[in-house]
Image 1 (tube, helix red, strand yellow):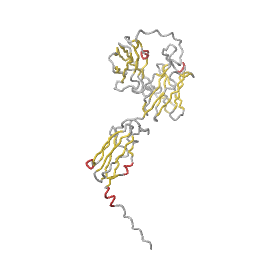
Image 2 (tube, helix red, strand yellow; image 1 turned 90 degrees about the vertical axis):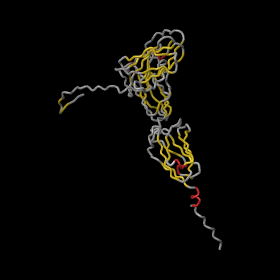
Image 3 (cartoon, helix red, strand yellow; image 1 turned 135 degrees about the vertical axis):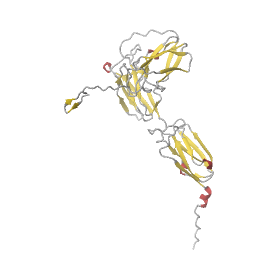
Image 4 (cartoon, helix red, strand yellow; image 1 turned 90 degrees about the horizontal axis):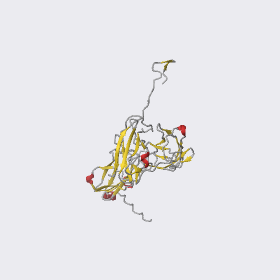
Length: 360
């Protein structure tokens, strides 16, 4: 920092401001290493998990303390796990039988990493020696090592990491001086969005994304003008959780009805970005006043993002309905009234038709 007072440097002139990475993010931290490509059963395979913050900054010091567990099998186990003091957890796993085995990774705060589960293929027989490296990037071998891209949530910050490999399939650490990937994304609207590529200290390159609109985003990925093997990968963005500000009730009977006549209404789940939730049960909590005046009050879900309410009143009344999200957050629009009238009084209050006048 350059600090002066009326043109004269103050004693603190030249003070350095050191910006460290933010806390470890379960969305952008990633795994790398030869063991991820698989190997023979009966031999320990190793890989590392790199701690990264939500802005894509790698942790280059400290012990992230990632937890690794085997998912659903007793034929694979953790051989060893330890932090290297440089923001990485080093892992060795082994399987006694050939097959695909999954490993779950969590942060030290028990948050599941987006890359989970990591699936490793253990094969029969012995490992084959790798072909000799030619030292240059092979686009056919180069691929994405990012979290699974098939199930992203609207509004999440994510990152797509590239692992450059040579013709032998060996990892090549890169900087921008060595060359760089070119990336763009075809948005659901059909527009093309170019992405800024960054390089990490350990030789990976990546770009970040955050999409608020649901839909399928197509990644166009090139190395020095040549498409890599992962070109055309789809990133599917799904709605986030139902929002108390955006979700709303619907149905003709919101305008009122009659006692002893079945009535119904629904509540549509919408996330905070305005994306309609079209799958699953939103699990809204619905409360109605004066339940003793109801013959029945049934709440169900159509598993298409809507909660459906069917009820019938025993007598005329104005019922107040309160809707809350699964987390008990009340709708911003507040409670609403359902007016139920007496069908007999409606008949009695109908205007009496005037008699037809006789012709003169």
